[in-house]
Amino acid sequence: MTTPDSTEPPAPPGRRERKKAATRRAIADAALTLFLERGYDDVGIREIADRADVSTTTLFKHFPVKEALVFDEDADQEARLLAAVRERPEGWSVPAALCDHALRHRVPAAGGDPRFTAFAELVARTPALRDHLQNMWLRHASALASVIAEECGLPADDPACAALAHFALEAPRAARGQADPRVAVVRAFDLLEQGWGAQARRPEES
Image (cartoon, rainbow, N blue to C red; front, side, top):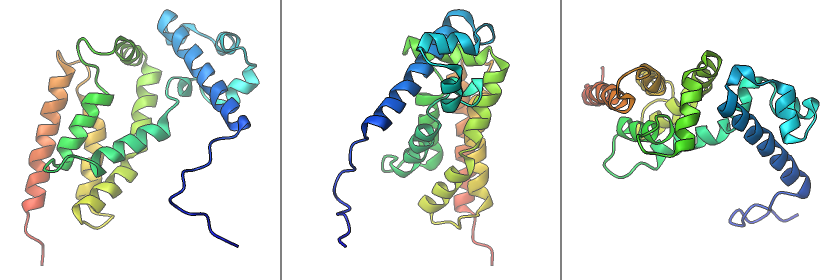
């Protein structure tokens, strides 16, 4: 039996997979539209299912909890997060790469994409969504710590890598409520940069 050539592109998804993905996207789009129109707490599951033209049973097959309707790209988020470290420009430190990622994907900019700004405001004013979002990001801490260790030639269980991963993921929450959240995020990462630099310069223990 021959082994498939690893250089060949993956086979395109079949009809069933495409239909499933389209249904999931339709549900998520319907939910976000309703949430932005009326607020997260004032929209029911039945309304979302009706807007997406699916049954509530189908909805829950794709999204087991209501909060997940707002955050339907968890795996993609982690992939982008890890790529920010692995594919950072030459000369960039890990904290600098993670700061850039946070500013591009977690903190809206003045005059930026209005839909992203509206989404961020929806999350900010809804406690259930704020908690779900933070828990979602912190689920990536272990994978991020491993990539940081790999990129820096440190042991996989190095506590400094775990600490950097955790605090980098927490930084946007620490900036919440500040007059300029983006400036606050940059200041938080400046602190992480200084600490990480000191860690890198620390002589090895005998």
